[in-house]
Length: 619
Image (tube, rainbow, N blue to C red; front, side):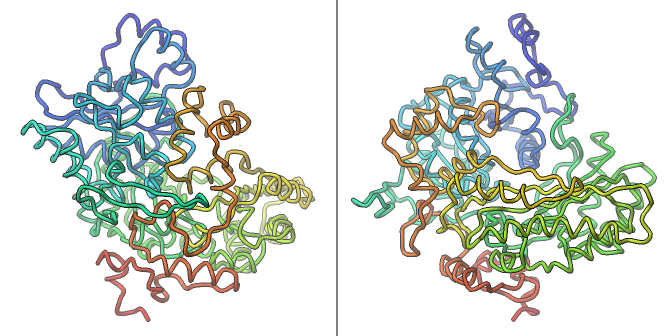
């Protein structure tokens, strides 16, 4: 990127100027005169967060392998940089070329977190692009979005021209090629959007009307101009033959996850009833050990990283994990590359696994019991017994670990204060297990960290109908947790209940939140996921002034027959299945994982992954 004198003066006034200059190793440069389509890939958070995201790395490389297309990266400038940009009228620009993104063909956002929505609007404004799709003219960029939060696109419906539903490796390029074709034919923006809506996995919100009843509930979502009544997600069936890059852009400053990342599989077999990702990415599709091993080795060679993380929703559920580690250790030991397994199940940490991962650089272990009592673990379908957890930590302690982090949720459906106190009791049993080990090194203590997030009901989960606890109740439960801990060996921390409330509002919101977002942007809201920028009081003022009750979205129990804002989006999971799972939760009944028995959730409609491969073994 060419740095002008003006930008150079600006960079001298901000923290971490390396966020804004590009030029990193493996960044892709092209001559804009030799390409047809320019795509600004926007991550609505800081450089350090966005550069850690695997999905952005995959699509950036995939797009740039197309001769006609140049994809460049854009991140939300921190408040100090934004202030200087606005003062000097510097528009939001792409890191590779330094060109203003308002001159690009596409501006694409990845939606990973509901509290980034204010940053989406702020980045469009910084770019000089009209916020609302209805206000954009023929020469303006097409604003698109994808990612897990696109499963309920309605709060952003008036700002996004087109949503990608599901996995993007194929559908994104299909839309970009359609745009290229229609532009060559001098067809209008409206014609392009109507045609794009016919592509599976594409949702064009301007082609749908939403009506409401006097009670405030949605009455109907009605498609227009030939748009499909249901928009079905896209899914990559064969991960061994799905694109994966052999190099990543390597940053010059430290980022959140500064290491190579190898993808092991997509989806999850478990069916935890609160977990949105576990349902959105069904069915489970694994890569072969040969593919994962090759991809990880290529990444380390082409980036210089000495650590590679095996990424999935639950890496120890990978059916060939031992074989994969055997392969990787053949080269990682000699090349001094550390292998990280960040997503381990409590019941997946074996002696054999311990013997392999203890040969590389070792940090603390993280497990997620999610609830402090067995009753509540059954409610959420966690399917983890307390004695299994304790045996797992004993195995870890015997292997030399003495730092354990335990993830829990508070505010789960049916939770009582006894369940909250059970979190501290379970953590105490982990501490006791360490000191009961006769082989432990004398004089060496144990550290157990309890991290408690607040339950947020999410679309496409069995708990999508459940109310979130009020902020006051969540605070009471946090206090109960603290008062239930009686040793300095246990440290407790928790997620802010205020931000969890706003997350729930936008997770289950509808189009009536669009004016709220626009007004919040006008009042300067951004970086709501950051404590030094977030203010619930200011947000409540916006809701009040817009005549919207946020509790209607966050704290209200929905009936099973209510039309939900996302009912016209199809992720392949049957609503009847989710209702049955919700009912089973109130009966403390569990559902076996996908390898034990098929629950007929609906994911088999995609004709891929575990639904096909293991069908002969399923009941």
